[in-house]
Amino acid sequence: MRSPTSSRISAARRLRPNAGTRPSTTRANTGDCEHPPVSPLFGRRKPPIVVPPVPQVTILGAGSWGTTFAKILADGGADVTLWARRPELAREIGLAKRNSDYLPGINLPPSIRATSSLEEAVGASAFVFVSIPSQSLRSNLAALSPLIGPETVVVSLMKGVEKGTGLRMSEVLEQGLVIDRDRLAVASGPNLALEIAKEQPTAAVISSASLATAEAVAMVATNRYFRSFVNTDVIGTEFGGVLKNLIAVAIGIVDGVGYGENTKASILTRGLAEMTDFAVAYGARPETMSGLAGLGDLIATSSSPLSRNNTAGRLLGQGYSFTDVVARMQQTAEGLASVAPILTLAAARGVDMPIVQQVSQVLAGTLNPRDIAPHLTTDSLEPQGERPIDGRKNRGGPALRRPFQRTFDQLRNGGRGAGGH
Image 1: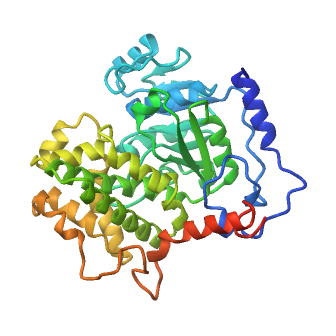
Image 2 (image 1 turned 90 degrees about the vertical axis):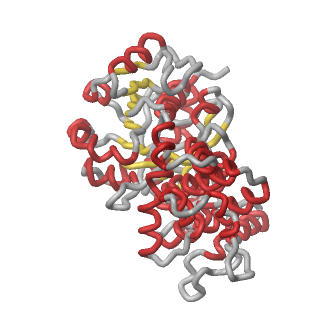
Image 3 (image 1 turned 60 degrees about the vertical axis):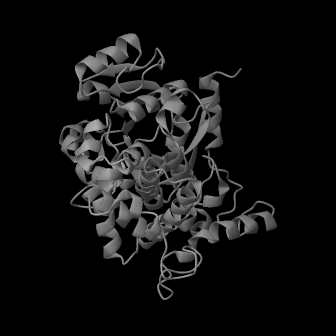
């Protein structure tokens, strides 16, 4: 069996630019789709980031996802320090290699260190992964900013938008840390923490404006049970992670009411169309919504009892008020906090989101959860997603057809992509 070090050195060699690769002229068509960490489809790029055999990394936030990602990185060969806000939790993780509050029953790698000191946690880390509740992120950045070095890569593990500003988490990080967006990345995909902590195989997407940054992060965040792919569609990758939470709440609501699979499948399908139209209106590529960061994440979050957003929806469907649901949830369900800012952003671009609107009404107590299903229908007989929502602006209505057409193009060209490169 190859050691993590030899595997990482081999991966670093694969990242070296190939002098014989012909520059691509089709980046706009292929560059925002998911690829393994190495792909000739992107053509010219910035020089690759050198990843040492044992990179130093920091995880900020010791909730279920932050702790799980620390395990992912450590199992991939990284030197990991995990920051926990509470000293007693840091002690438990550091000494017992357990997180009984957020990840009970999981043994953490012995190499993981934990601390409640932000300065000690960041140290000289080359990569800082941030897993803090989205609505408290900005308040933590003032203390973090002076600790981030000029070459440090910062990766968002969060799936939310900031109330009041409507900013995505990478935008909040860019503002709060005053950091070049080429040193920012986001991670998303069908990533239920407990399943991954149990080392069940899964995949994720690492997205950055800089392909070199995305590839470097993907190298670090890959191991025998966790595979990272890359794209450069940061907008689509982030909004996919945000929007699927809202649809998962809706599916949880009808599940709590007692409706069956037909209703849930209808919401999932029409919800994906809403997600695509919204994301495309803000500059995302529609293909991203049919990939791991969109459809993949939506399926996992909507169908699993491990999903906090699905659980919150089920409680709402069972008759609990919004206040009661928040009180009963041990961890943050990001979808609940994202409903209002997403609807504000949708209105600003003229995007119709009836399912998310219904979730908002249930949260406000103005719509009986049992009445959510009849509102799935509209006056139009055309299925949502089969035509442009606005035929003049073409903001993404036919988006669900484009990824399939691209797949057919790839098959026709022997897997070389639509442009044949």
